Image (cartoon, rainbow, N blue to C red; front, side):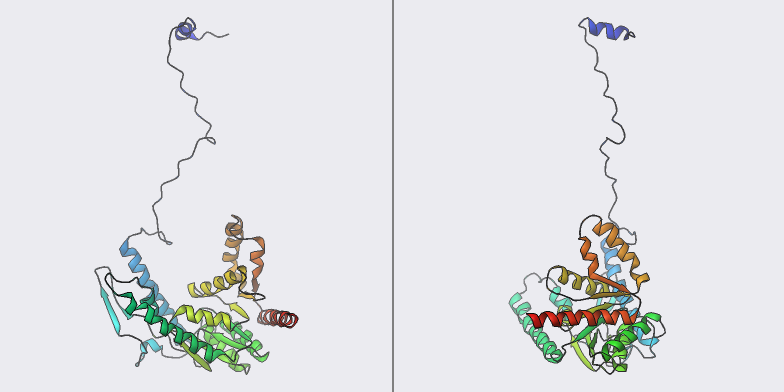
Length: 335
């Protein structure tokens, strides 16, 4: 056996020696220290109050610009640039060294604000419930005659010569001819295309407008217009009077409506309610993410992906709605 040297011999005779250093663990067995990464925005910017304030206001400005673009593309002056703006309050001016912005204080904003220190909440929120109740009553009363309805969502900035505008118009026309009321958010773009298709198909064209920090205005193809101050009241009307949602390419608002419907189906609140995402190419990235990340980490079940229908064909989209409604009607007869 090879000699251990002088220190080894001393140790063998009872002498003390420094303990040998521990062998290093293989790289794969060492506990990896998590990389310290500071919180960033979705675009990679550092997070501070000024960044968040600018992002919030920039988001509102972008929404306004997209809505105005949709009106101009259809050959109209955007209502937000015209006289006689309809608002529930005068404009506000905000200037706190972070930004300077003029806009409307909406009823939604007032409802969602935390009570101010020392403010008697009994003079604010409980009384606001009466206005909310009145808005529900108006919506129910106006839309009570709708027994077969489809809500179509999508971007307000979509131009009339865009293939998605043309497809939305066509699917609405087909469904209107089949006896369905067409419901939209009343704005330009995809919403206008759907309301126009309803008129071309001889159907009932409904618009549920919402109070925004700027005047959105309704497109000229709406037969029945209902104006809402509160998003949650409006969202209730979309769900209650629809047998299906058709989701055309859009932004945060479009995604919000799509995932709310999917959640209501997943939790047993809706049954035989198609959520049709129109435009395979546009939605492909979202579907891949849901499959690889959300399903891959078991945040949803495999069957949840089958709640989403994908198509590029207006006739297919319309037929999926018609088939689901027939199934709903059969279940009601058997009940």
